[in-house]
Image 1 (tube, rainbow, N blue to C red):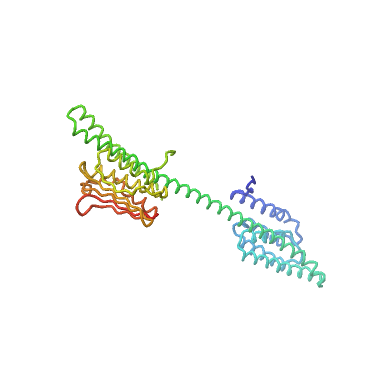
Image 2 (cartoon, rainbow, N blue to C red):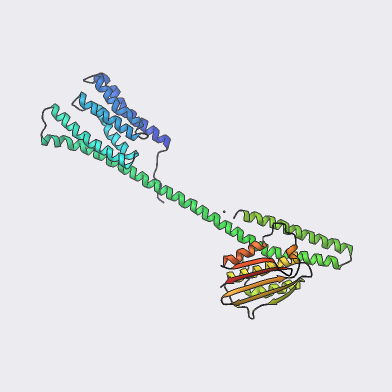
Length: 381
């Protein structure tokens, strides 16, 4: 794999700038005693090199300071001085660390400085001709162009790398978000499946234990059945609490039931003591597995609610019809489920509605006008 390019840390960049500026400033200090015009020229050299300490943080100001020092140098002497080595570094800095606009300004200043320097030097020697002007101007101009090009390329590369890093970080964040959403969806699906399956089984146990407790006269059996019923209710409560935790974080090998398994579900409920009248199509039509699973779970949850809330003598009617590419389902009872107390933790109606709307269908649930409770759903195929 290609290794990421090495980049200086902010601390490393600061140390590099200090080292570079110091390396350029130190010779100017050493030449103080030897300058032909002594201190003024030496101080002018320092005025050109010292601003380079801030070339990264204030490139425009550094370019302005170095350019002004060069302008004054043209007024004082008409020959090159040591401090002019700072000018290419200032041009590079403004092209590298500033915007494209100021980079163009720096290039223009460099070309203007090449013109003025060539004119000043040639006029000082009284040898200004077109040939001599070109001979002086071209090298000075090339120095400015090369410094600007290197700085501009470095800035472009830095922006490109920064864009790649930003894109990589954004993709990483999106991947984490997608994983979190997928995990939340899976937790919600597990919560629905556990509620539908486990609540169904526990409800059967509780109803059977309550019925058997009233049917037997043996005190030991009565206490045992009471314990079974109480344990079942506690398990239902605890399961709802755990499933609530699973859903609160929402932002197997065994085949899933399908529509053809609805008759078996009704037969199981009848065996558990629920009085059911069913109107089902014969034969059960083949539908998509997802739709069939949703219908099965809606019927299962509706029957579970009947056992929990409608009362032991409640009668249930299940109507299932498939026509005009729509499944129509109704689970009606005449019990007292509409007036039963609600602990506020039930997830059954919410899960049924989610299953119906997931396939573009609708679900209505509520008390019947003549008493009892009704659940009806329509799911398009």
